[in-house]
Image (cartoon, rainbow, N blue to C red; front, side):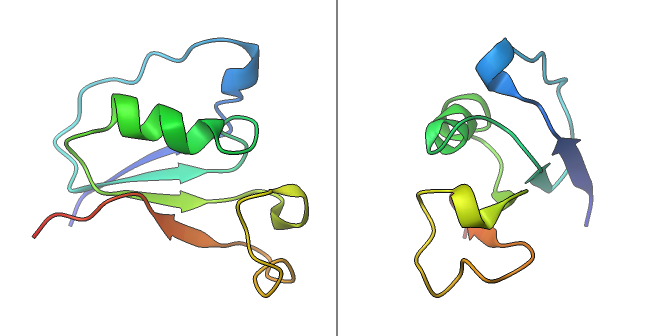
Length: 82
């Protein structure tokens, strides 16, 4: 399995040019964008790949449930391929 790892993109400050990859899965780690905007960006720009999102600070992220807020990091699969 090949991973394409992108971290701390901080898209709230500008765009990112993500290179084409033959990876099987994309990992978005750290601060990608504000709130749910990182998820929206991934759905738009990484449509052909399964994505795993590893958040940087789950205590401040509004898309997490209260049961996950105590974890060091969390994982969210945007979509999966059969």
